[in-house]
Amino acid sequence: MSFWVSLVDAVAVLVIAKLVWIAVRVPVLRFAAERGSVRAQLALGNMYGSGKGVDQDYDEAMRWFRKAAEQGSTAAMDNIGVLYELGYGVEQDKAEALRWYRMSAEHGGTDGMNSVGYAYLMGEGVDQDEEEAVRWFRKSAELGNPMAQTNLALSYATGQGIEKDRDEAVRWFMTAAKNGHKEALAALEQLRKDGVL
Image 1 (spheres, helix red, strand yellow):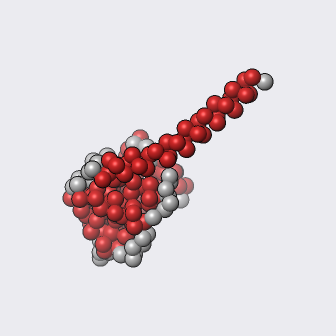
Image 2 (cartoon, rainbow, N blue to C red):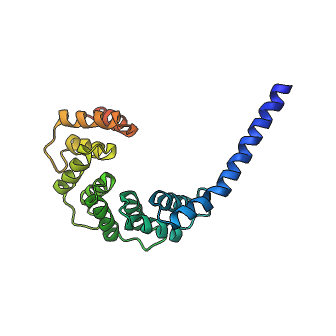
Image 3 (tube, helix red, strand yellow):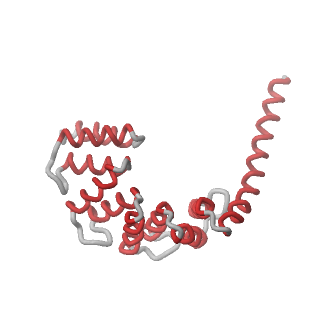
């Protein structure tokens, strides 16, 4: 009986601690963000964008992402691009999204590079150009971005924007999987099942 009581007490303490942390976290982050902390600005932007720990507010998310982006945060630039791409809190604007992804890419952001590649692949905010898409995927993939590695692998597997090359496709899928992109192995298996590889 005492084990269960102490277990219940421990869970109650953890729940209370989490609630206190949430209540304290936002003011602490806001304090740091207002004093120029890029990490705090990005964290607040993510919280407001997702509604975790605060009421969801895309305007507030955009405000904090812009502050972080002004200080060179490629993650913030990418997040602004996503807001424009999906039309969250702003009018959907694929060209404006691409502008932010390019800005991220110019600052070395591999997610931005991958997103520029995807925009070219799909013709979103720019004329469709599969070869240009592959160029961006490769640049990001070579810098270690697992999603770009998967996109490059898919390009090799399908021959989209580059000559079809089974060995290169498998190599990039495996590299992406080693770098934590779980979907890479699933995509590889599906392409094998479909007879593409």
